Image 1: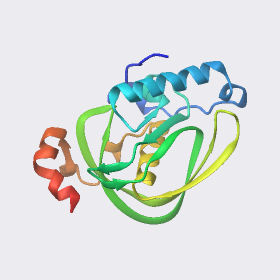
Image 2: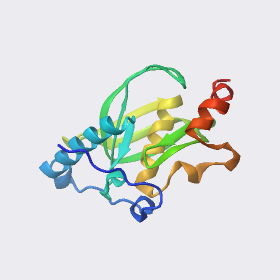
Image 3: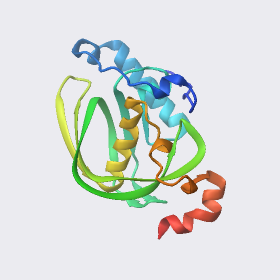
Length: 181
């Protein structure tokens, strides 16, 4: 296990569509090592999600773990560490809500992004099992954010208004109270 460097906005790999993992790759030792490295990296950088392209691997793989509890987004239900291989999103309801998103690949900034709030995720687990997950609200936003990385999309690409992009320090000082309303 190792902590990997998270690629930052501007690196060309972050703008590429990642390739799907083949069934033999999903169960491989190399994929398990990559997931272990991604978890170590996530813990070291302090995020809640990480996609393989962010650590230099152009593969359709992401991990998400939400500790839950009180946050700047309100009280969140926990979501256990889950590995998503070759995930696909189906939007179940077009109603949108916005959150001030941040990203390990865009350090020091926050941006207000509105996304559909009711989705279904189809994905494969590391053991090869196919799964479906339906979610709403903040969790739906997290999955869309992470899986965007698999298509070469960063949250800043989804900003409807660039005036709603701020450095974290200024966000905490000037926008946080507005974001809670």
